[in-house]
Amino acid sequence: MRRRLLLILPSLQQLDNYAFRLIKYSRFPPLSLLTIAGMTPPDEWEILVRDEHVESSEVEGHVDLVGIQTYISCANRAYALAAYWRARGAKVVLGGLHPTSLPQEALPHADAICIGPAETAWPEILADFKRGRLQGTYRGRREGSAALVSLPRRDLMNPRAYLIHNTMVTSRGCPHACDFCYKSSFWGSRYYEARPIAEIERELETVADGLVFFLDDNLLANRPSARALFNVLRGSGIVWQAAGSLDVTRDPAYLDEAYEAGCRSLFVGFESIAPENMRANNKGVNATTDYLEACRRFHEAGIMINGSFVFGFDCDGPDIFERTVEFAIEGKILTATFHVLTPLPGTRAFERLEAEGRLLHRRWEYYDTDHAVFRPRRMTPEQLESGHKRAYREFLTYRSILHRSFGLPGTAKRLAYNVAWMKVDPLWVAIVRLGLMPFATRIFNRVLRARTKPKASGRLAEPGLVIGSPGES
Image (cartoon, rainbow, N blue to C red; front, side, top):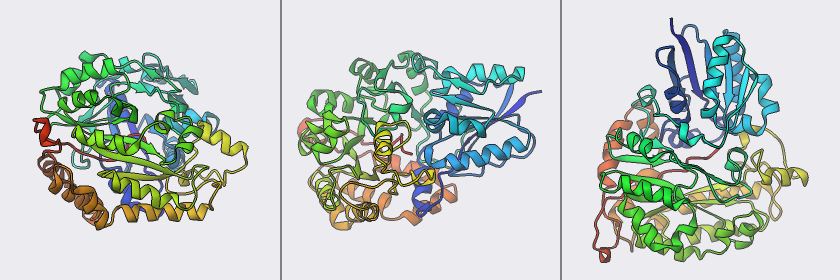
């Protein structure tokens, strides 16, 4: 008789903008849980995957083992779920960013925790569970974890809940070591090896709709690995998005290679328009980059920009919000995410602000990049939160949309994308709740395959999606 395994992604706490969270986290399924499911012997386990952003995690009948992926802002929800399932007789394992950063806090809530990447520890966890000897704490190895990534069990996800079905990881880590980045507590300050290219190619062969979102922290950082991936993707008909740092704009030919391989948009961490903020937070590549010139090079390559910006650094005054939006409009950034600086446990930013006595509390549900959880140096927490909201409003005005859409190839597409994606949230909430995402995906797949590369290049192609960041919260 097979045992039952339940894998849960808890919902982020529903504070003051539930509609935004519902839309944001219905964009793609929980890849980590689907990958763990793929590593679990199906002849021994009945496997259930539940994402609370789009469905209830309640399951009838007995469950033997529960695995819960735990981010900081859903930590309390994860602990509540752990208590619930332990009361029902299941063993519970907590993993993810938060248990890795604060294992002493997480362990009392579970039968076991996994620190670091679970891929290298999961077989041992399953074996110990079968013997009835869970050890309490497991440590996933960073080295070699990429080679162990198996094909995710996408058949276990809700097929009507997500805009993008095919998310993938091809590498681990990032060569940059920004003080505020969540990955520093999980991967440290280095880039790890990529997955074997044959395994990546095998997974790409399962892509049926021609859309892929690569969730690597910095896909383009290791150029030999990236170029091997380009060789597989070139001519495949797949269009894709990934995350990349600004240093890629120093080599326009490299961007052209990415475009020819199907890259149509990149999530780019501009973070702050103030170079002194970047120098103070160990992101030197940004401090030495001309942002407007970088935008021009992305546009020349036909690659659309989803810019990420953070407010609340020590050099930020009350004028930072307006100046940042002005740059985003001038740079014709198609979409943007604005964040309140959030000192995540395990990062140097957290250690510094805690040592300076500037943390306001440890109510983890507010550590969501929407709320001020520390005292900024040059403004009040209230000014930081209100300025953050104002930046979003100003970026999404019709004046802003028009300015960012005209003057580049694909004007009609850019206009339609901004209006549909950023101005009609009630429509997206209805689409998610009614299970109409497959219909929405087909429309996006057609509309977004319009030219964005300047005609002078002589190449016409089809742009893909520009959607939110892989690694938030």
